[in-house]
Image (cartoon, rainbow, N blue to C red):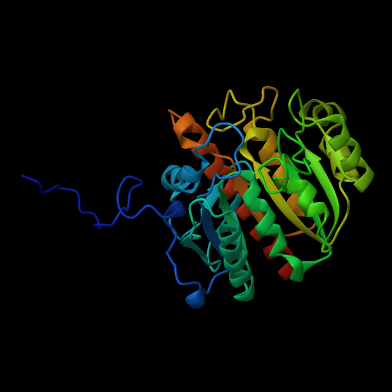
Length: 324
């Protein structure tokens, strides 16, 4: 009764709801000593730096689960708008699992994060880091010293330039201040910054004194993407840190500190493509996805899609440069 008259070749479909839930169902390599890839995805399930709603420790797991919708396999993905194939062979992308986190121990957790990112770089792969709250960007950025001088580009609702709060210098409100103190970072652009609660005036003054380019979504829409690129420092290498609250909470509510007035998916997508053409991106992270506040999984879904978009843009530029 199960036989069909039409002959067909039986396939293993590996549908999104089957199998082991790696990022986009890419191959798994949890032993970094065995890593052999162009891009290595690694999760940091950490939220000890959050000042309000916790839950980003489940961010990497939520993003991975949502990403299975886009598990188009090892053949790559066709973009009809650009008439391009992205993430196709011979590019090798693997999921390296998660950094080990020690509950209540910021120092040891940060050391583990930095060590993992350094190991990925030593193996010749580009780190793509899934957060976690935004404080994880501090050890990620510290591990990039071999690429200096670097320009940091932040997409975020908040400036994240707090020096300390009652002596705490490593919360999720401080990563950009800490990056500015690193010798291998010399320039910075902070995009999407907006609204009450982003930071106090003294922090904005300090960021501008450092030389940071600070633009809100409203300002970016007004001046246009071409002008934004002219304002972003033209460095040779870039590190991107993307906070999901840079996107409007009507699209991405699953985060600890949502802020109205953010970017749309299309705006972020175009911005990431433009930055990819602006200079070499050596690493990026995507932080602050909090699945407990994401009842429809749309936040995780959007995060997964943007991570895949950015990986595709970066590798496409490498393809073009290799063909020159």
